Length: 318
Image (cartoon, rainbow, N blue to C red):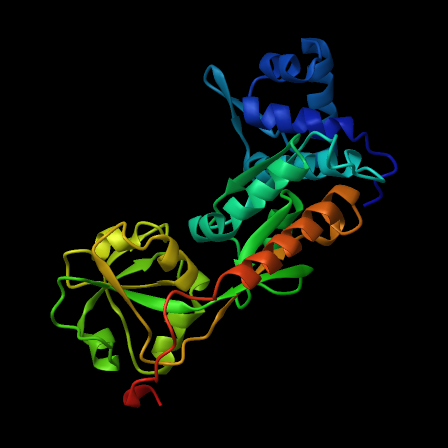
């Protein structure tokens, strides 16, 4: 379909109509009179050959196509806003800008805090917004990345998008200090026998996926949507949890847990910043990526990639 005959202002009208489900409120939202918004709705209905909004009783409801367009229109508006707000240059010391990054609580605690300190010192008018990635991040990654400034996520989850490397980490296990069933070293038998508490988005933990290849199916007793609560769900229980070494080091002392190395050669974490190609040549994004890479390099140079020294793998995992 050629876009030469389309009025992009209709995208704003479409979003307002689908979200408000009321012509008057939609018009007020984008600064159009009720007759002008009614005319826009008529044009949209002719374009789609669909009512989009159908009256049911005393109110409007979305048609099947209207429901399908609801999220797509919001995404399109966000992307258009980013396209038309792009600049040829970016002066961090004087600019006012907000960057939205999708990141787990682990990435925010380990990397995001350092990035925020650097941004505050070098670009006081720049704001950072961290949001947790949706569970469907692997299903429509392109659409998701087109509406944010980046995604902090380790390799092994998504691919096919530009990325900059940030830092490395390693996996460790948390065991309660009071758990006398585990000695100074975990064994593969311990992993199979003891109950687990896990981060519920398992795609973020390739090391956990390794276990099935080793014949271990974790007996999950509790699942949560963040890494930082894991120590509290392990303390004073028989449970064990898999967590990143850098986070374990930062959480040391917050709960009565021990940090032990895996009894198998767990795949390391290589954290990266991913973005949509539409942002590649934008000056503000270039500054953000360069800053993130620099902070990641400083993090790698200043701290070890883990909380404890590596140990020999258990015989069962060799």
